[in-house]
Picture 1 (tube, rainbow, N blue to C red):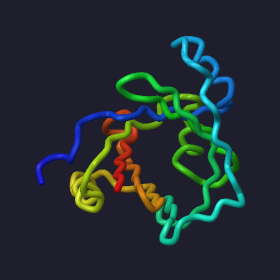
Picture 2 (picture 1 turned 90 degrees about the vertical axis):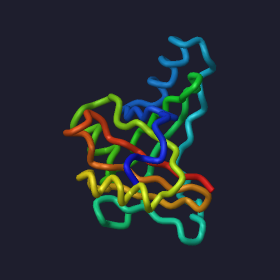
Picture 3 (picture 1 turned 180 degrees about the horizontal axis):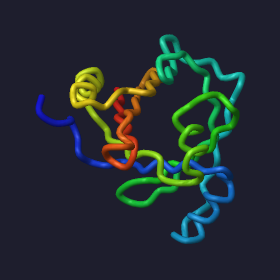
Picture 4 (picture 1 turned 135 degrees about the vertical axis):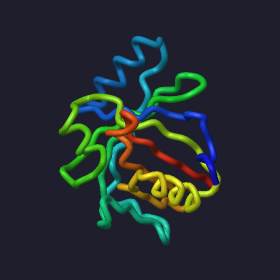
Length: 153
């Protein structure tokens, strides 16, 4: 394999301190409806086999999230809902409200993870949700932003 499976950016991830305010500001700027925010559901049962790993440790990370649709991509706004270590909380503490990652759909999750690691980009976060999985890589210093690779069944 000599390149990643995809070069099409599907979303830009922005971490923020006040998701409701940030979402309202994007909606006003782009004249779109204020998107609904998804809040953590502590009663939600994760699908069998689902997991979250951050820096090698199993985590249950609570996030507020929403998406602002801007064709052909969307902005995913994320606000950490607690102090559980996560790539989003680390980014927010280091940089404040800002772009955190670029996301790409791929088809060959393990193969592309291996490819990234062979090129010196360590995987720092991985989540399996059942119908989809995604991973973040330590690319900030070399590329200026984290990369997220996402695969759907």
